[in-house]
Image (cartoon, rainbow, N blue to C red; front, side, top):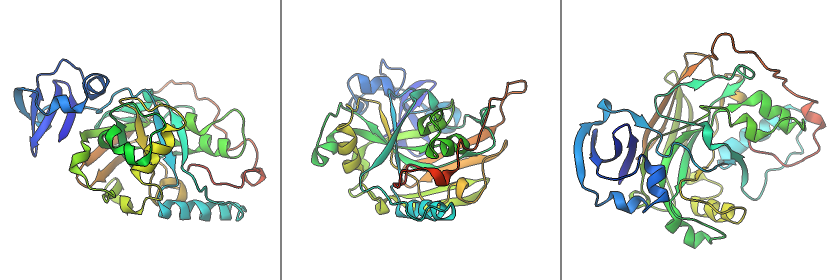
Length: 315
């Protein structure tokens, strides 16, 4: 089942390009998940039918309670991270053996088609990361991997936009910076266009993910290469905090993020993240409004080579 949060309400896509707006007393899928859950959308009566391109589509879950970002979950991305550390004089860095994750503000979510706004204080090194996102459907606390599937609402697409200068400060040991802050600016988590329920997929998950910037393919990989599968991630994270309905887990990004080639996002760029069987998430990049006061944007508080942690962090 393919579900959308739209300006007309919750809708079900029963045939490609046509939405059936449902008779449900919930503004969006986030509210539905906090109520009866996605199964209520299966039997809900149809109010009207409308073409997908004629209705405004919102993020499936406009304001998740929390977003958990998993790093280094594609071998291809882990390899390029190690290459970067070696170039920085840190060949001793080792990859973590357990999932690596960060917490990000739910207010960073923005809708398909909406602009990614470059923050005035950290506009020069903003980066994209195409990802498959997991949406939680039922509370999960210390669940096993075998139990994880029953706690999922479905999958969607995310772009894990990051201010790399702030992130690099955090990774270099600057106590005034954090990776979570680097990824939490408003509009830094485009999400959508739809939520596809778990029954539409087989396990282990094998979906092709491609990220394009201005039509150029920058990332191309398959989720079958995950280091940690979806069930393992849900189980692991649920042992740190209860996963609530509407919470979102970003499952990692493959090789090809802009930080590794020096190609950061600029005003006017169009980023498209396409995931097989889900769709395409498209957003344009916009400059910070004129007149905004620029904050300090230091690339590092101290050289990266002086960091003492020998384990790679999320990048």
